[in-house]
Image (cartoon, rainbow, N blue to C red; front, side):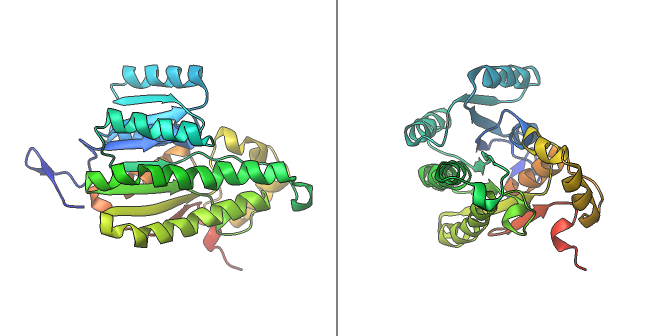
Length: 264
């Protein structure tokens, strides 16, 4: 990614003039990412399955002066994924600088209690949808001549934290997909990285935050001794999308207070 300048100043720390698609951007980490990218100057497109929730967020962002648009989409649906990319292409004139695959879900059960339907739901939501939306977005990313993909994974794909074997397997696959695309698409000037959060204070994490046994074990193994904030994840995502990070690709960065590196 070539370094540009705006008004004579280096734009290594700006996303001004860039376009971004963030899936599932109306709550939790996704919401934070939309705001972070918009604050840095990007024009952002996002999606949600909930129309009322999406419209409320779009109004909030408009009041803040952010350039954010969006549409209703369940990216688990092949038809809706295709429609989403068609809309994004139209809004951004066939070019996309940033793709953030944020959508995810989990079911917290022991392995022997998972059904085939649970397996299908978790794999399609956490892996399949991100894989296919990335395939569909490739022409737009390549056309921008300087693109960045960021997958939102989880430390559950790096170490076992007892929040569901299927979720962990799907996130582990995302981590490895990141490495493969970084190598395969480098020739197209597309960087691919992954952010793997630990437990972050979001609606998705509420079941774990209420479990006293989980909280006690988690805090004991986390050097910083606390759960993470959404802003601490969104800022990492934004950095990976900046021109300043132009030599970083194929990496999975754990934003976890040190949990994954704590030894004996």
